[in-house]
Length: 176
Image (cartoon, rainbow, N blue to C red; front, side):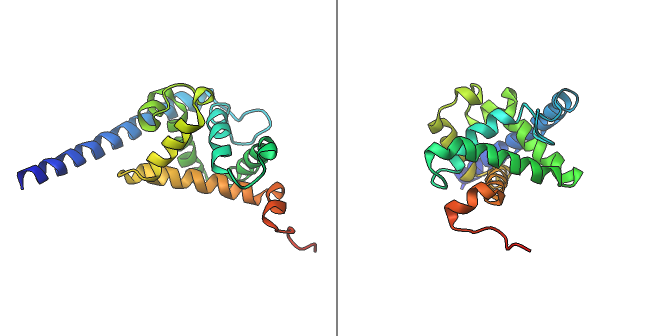
């Protein structure tokens, strides 16, 4: 019985530590990025600091949805579609998405929370897959929610793009 309470205590400590790291990282990222990072060239919402992570994660999440030779075009179409979708979000939801992107982009939070200690550009596909799987199966609900949000945003952006329609057999919306 005593051993079980230590495990519970340990789990609570890990949960509290994870929450504190995320909260501290979010606060720090808002402080650092709020003044320094406007939209990247050609985008309404996505920032230069968001793009390295998104350009590395997106192809892995789109694996199997398009030919590998078409992947660069698919990634760009997805980012443009994602940006358009984010541009129409409420300020409160956009703030939450930016917090997620900040946590994933800042080295202070990226390393401990994702296991990607180097830049996104230097991370291997296997390291990124391990991060995605770790978050998907995390005991911390916040990380599972972060994974689900990232996955849903990218997949929705991909399938909203006309580039994706031919691959899945969708002829497009009816002409009116």
